[in-house]
Image (cartoon, rainbow, N blue to C red):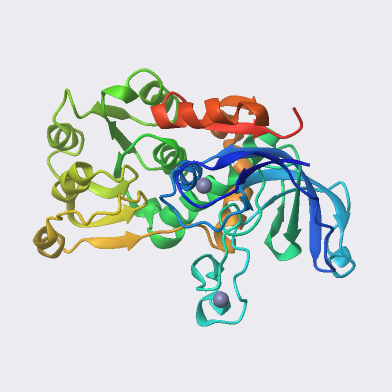
Length: 347
Ligand SMILES: [Zn+2]
Ligand SMILES: [Zn+2]
């Protein structure tokens, strides 16, 4: 089968290769992949800025159809079912974290798409425990963004308690910022302020407004603190969702969120340590929720609301490309000219 492979360590070393289809073990499923989304993590793997063990098939945001079921998995799964799946392959199932429902941060995890063969391929062989059924009526395009939506659900509903907020600031307007916008709307947040920079004005800000943002702010032309004060009668926002990974945005958020407010931290910063207004966290008694990845519970939450939010989630998919065009796809992600790009493995 054709697959996009990180074939050697170091910068670059990514290309389409012919790879064998691994037959499923007793507790595994063979999935014919429909779509696999390009994620920022894939760009970091290509640039060798994210841990990976080549040769490995990349891609972790996938959906597809079961074409073969291992003997033990047959009690729960059958051929022809449409599924999405988690990327927490290798998680041990026995440690304190796994037993607490947090295999996404298990020390033994070998993440699918970076340390375990992933889904930029025609077929994926997956331990059945990581699969989830796609709800009836949800399109492939919407199913294709389930993984980032599960992360958003974890961050806003399991770590943070964004449903308690009347006003929220979202710093950063790429996929995670826009998904947070959609979910804040679903959680009945009244004021949803999304900030970004001049590059967001053409595509991402109009999209944010379509998805439920009540105000967008280009911080290169407007003062974010002034806008927030205006919208919240000088109180500051109840919740702040950090999706940018920018040191400047992080410190402006700390200044803007109200006393006793929530900080939901999603965006990773670069490898270098960044200065933070630490005392403000204490003076304001802020609740800080640092978030990473997507435990199984968050997949259930995401899939349960996908039918209701399908129309909005679909708008995040701005391009669908064949595998052969992967380099253009990676380039568009780097330049910020696309929100979510799905690779069609059947094209
Ligand atoms: Zn991802
Ligand atoms: Zn474990």
